[in-house]
Amino acid sequence: MQRFTGRRVLITGGGSGIGRATVHRILAEGGLVVAADVNAEGLAGTAEQADAEGTAERLTTTVLDVSDEDAVRAGVAAAVQALGGLDVLVNAAGILRSSHTHETSLEFWNLLLRVNLTGTFLMTREALPALLATGSGVVVNFSSTSASFAHPYMAAYAATKGGIQSFTHAIAQEYSKQGLRAVCVAPGSIDSGMTNNPGLPADADFGLLAKLAPALGQGFAGPQTVAGVIAMLASEDGAFVTGTEIRIDGGTHM
Image (tube, rainbow, N blue to C red):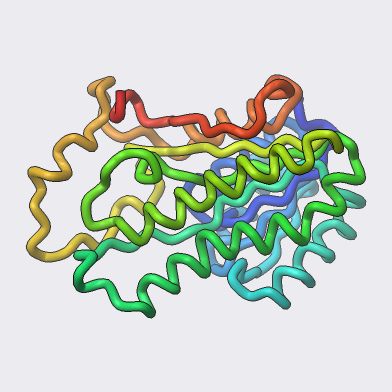
């Protein structure tokens, strides 16, 4: 499939996990991509893979902290200039931390809010003028199954993801008459790198976590599983999908 030929896509979190998988999926389908990440080494790995796959000429990488307003303003402007416009924004950047809620510091809470929720807001705000200029822009945000289902020790993380869902619903309505679509993916039971070390408390009750196993019985899925859904949602195949979230969890939360 070449659903993204000539389409211009900015992807945050492009240096690892689902973000990196999405970069390569969009490139494989013909897209022009700017991959942003706070981790320069991760971006170098993304670029190396694109070179091996023969898609490097359509990839630009940029180091960007999505929680830094000035950096986001400059980074989005540079990406739009490099691409000659913007058709799709994928806000994949995010962090996962766990803690007993009664032991959660304000610093811990604010860190997750700043990166996950505020970062999504800043990137979207700065990209909206370019997206709206196309008359058919798409924003794909990252929620999580934790936003709608109980994930112990992840109250702060879940709060950020619930906020992203609500934010996505609101902008989907606000800009619908200007052709913008805004959707969320809500991954769960995905081996994304981030989930390998969620920082669970040393005394975590794993009985509370037992329900997080996928029903399909094949274990956690890889990040490419989510990348494929993002590609569908951001392409013309998803043209009638907006203001909602798509759960991708192998039936964990049926």
